[in-house]
Length: 96
Image 1 (spheres, rainbow, N blue to C red):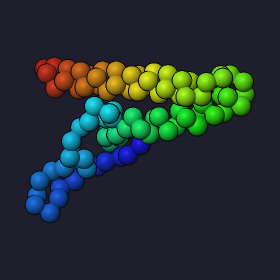
Image 2 (image 1 turned 120 degrees about the vertical axis):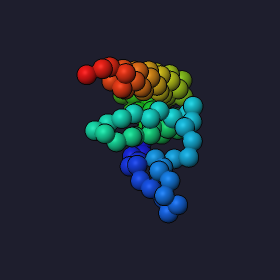
Image 3 (image 1 turned 135 degrees about the vertical axis):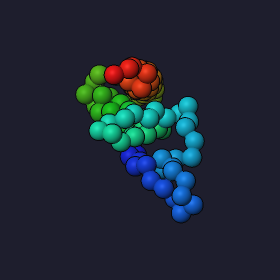
């Protein structure tokens, strides 16, 4: 998970810390900061959880368990990202 602050580079252009938004990451606004969560980070975390689940007897197939969990978590993050984007647009459009 990476946290970026908006800053200006030496040419005076505003940048958010990443040059492009990828389909393999979700960008969430948390406490007025952009947090980029990559799919690889989620997959690595889920592999560790799958090892623990295997040791506890929750699953017999670590790879499938990790893939399913990573897919579910990433989908939830992408849906939340889209919901935040829609709410942000509504706030800008709403007259005072």
